[in-house]
Image (cartoon, rainbow, N blue to C red; front, side):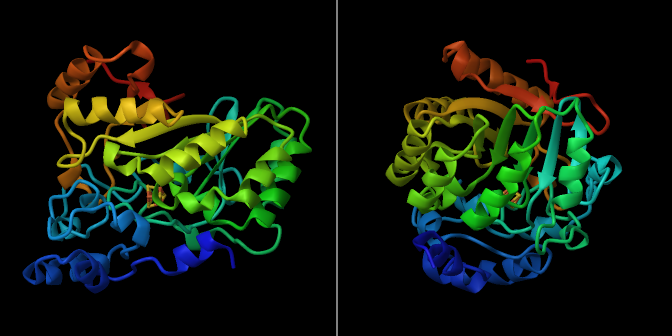
Length: 326
Ligand code: SF4
């Protein structure tokens, strides 16, 4: 087992362990235990090591700690806010936008983000044994308008290199595909995943690779994360970042400006700042549109244009992400 798989196997998986590792107030544990039944806790120990012990308001901890609000109903917050079930021509393949299709490669992640828009996704309905992608690849072969395939999940980098190799080799045999894109949080929360085996996998790719990482706060850019990003960049990967605007985590221009600068120094360009998807159980992360617009304007006033992410919302049925005004 490689080092990253050992790290993943050793991740924190219960509220009790999170409380013990971070020395959190025991009075708050029962609420976390109740909410963890809705979406289990999963936190790599290296990521937990970046959090401030004893501080439930720490912005990294708030991304992973179950809160009692997750069990509350809130108008407009639903299990499938993006209606992804309506745009799946074959199991595991989502075709929402012209020219691009998304493969749900796995239900596994290295971290469970409490705001996840797929926290209710029916992963169990998507078969994942053997060459499960055969039907999806067949659909892509017969869809000459699709030129880019996104590997998503879950998190595709939780798959072993051998599975990624077989999947990508099959995709690269489709002549009309021009790019492959991976969406992954592992370079941020489990940077040891970017090891020699993965770099060798990248070196064998016929198609240009884009890797969209997912950092929400500048403190996530540890020296290990920066090293992982630099290795990816040196391997010829185009690196982009997407964040979600989250109340109590990164909802300030100061934090977002620092995040953009830290990303650039790691070789990553800010790509999207997502408005929160209205998935059931995450309403407490929401900021109002007017507050968010003011933050965007304040950030843009302090950064060169190439470090200002697009502020976007995903709307069901829209032909692409909707760029929001500010
Ligand atoms: S890594 Fe991505 S898919 Fe997994 S829980 Fe976090 S946001 Fe959701």
